[in-house]
Length: 483
Ligand code: BES
Ligand code: MN
Ligand code: MN
Image (cartoon, rainbow, N blue to C red; front, side):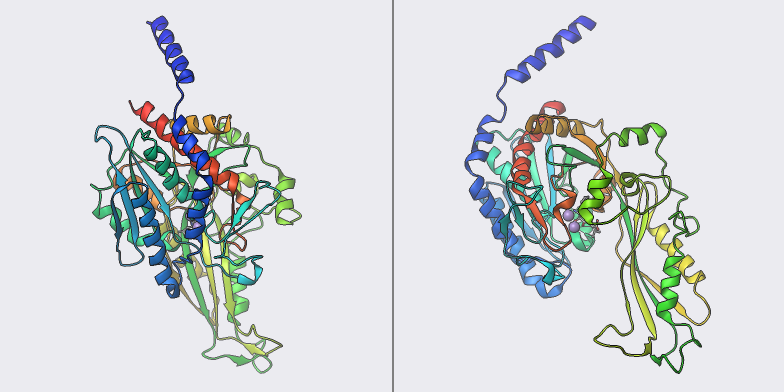
């Protein structure tokens, strides 16, 4: 029995090595690089900013252009699905109902471009520039990496497989226009369209990898609880000479309250905050520590002297398996030119908490809210308003999907990818599992240095093309492993 198993696997690995898989597809890709790039540049020229309603028409235009591309590559049932917010672009190719189905998810909406002054070229006029990490050049534009460039790799990879009749699985595309604002309407769509979305795996490129020569697959995302706080002191702005020292200044108080949310060990002080945090075993942490990380390179890239965070955890751990709390914006009082002597009536802040398994965003929001109210000194009142949140997600490294992705990277990069948990959030991933019962494979090709959400966002040409090359190998390996 043992002998026959060995014999069988040897035979199949020889077969695998000999078979020239996806050769026509890969040839098509290498012959169409320029067209692929131009297609992406056209999408990048449309400012599909989902958060700002003055861009609503552009968001719709972007959905329109994307849907045309899906039709052009030969997908069926292409539809711009209207929602209460921005539309979802859908398309599919069912080549044989008996074959496994891959559901590709991505987003065509982008973050606002501001602060616009800090861009070295206009955010919606993509240009290609070389950088230290991208000697082949990188596309500079809002959405280049997050997520138009990465989402579009799938469109082009499927185009190539369809053109060369090498598509080995059924494929469905669901590209939304509200990821950057919380995917609320996508959640409704997913619940209403379970049949249309039936699949075996969800494939997403909306994360990163360690380096261009150190491919990695994202195996975890943090959850999110996001709140806005308002601290009110006196009923009107006051002369800071007449009243200074006599009343609680909402801005001073807000700063103090925020400061108290972390202790000297940088632990979050909200009672119960850590109660549900899943702890990793020593073995799991040791495994994590094997991923390459350079403290000096990390600090150097950010022009900081040192890192800062929770005691007893490494920087990669602080940014992935541990929760965090950060002020994302704070305002109040006079910020104009010169000096106005005033004690403002109100102060505000927007605060995000990144969560890890098994923290529940609703519970954390409540814990935050009651704690923040409880620490308010006499003389001010506090209002906490929750914004959108999302659950954390972890994906297994022994699933068919992960293994197929690993096969694919090994083929295109020549080395096995490393599993890495990320600090970012894609709330819909946990939803997919809950509502559709589907696992997600996160094949991200961006770099942390690609400045997503920041001025001068960019995406390496190497990464764009490598992604297009890797995706067909995933389809191929997934079809094979699902047999
Ligand atoms: N693509 C990012 C998330 C991401 C980036 C995950 C890099 C891992 C690595 C996504 O578009 C995003 O920005 N998500 C938001 C959350 C959302 C609810 C606004 C985030 O993480 O802030
Ligand atoms: Mn994204
Ligand atoms: Mn984003």
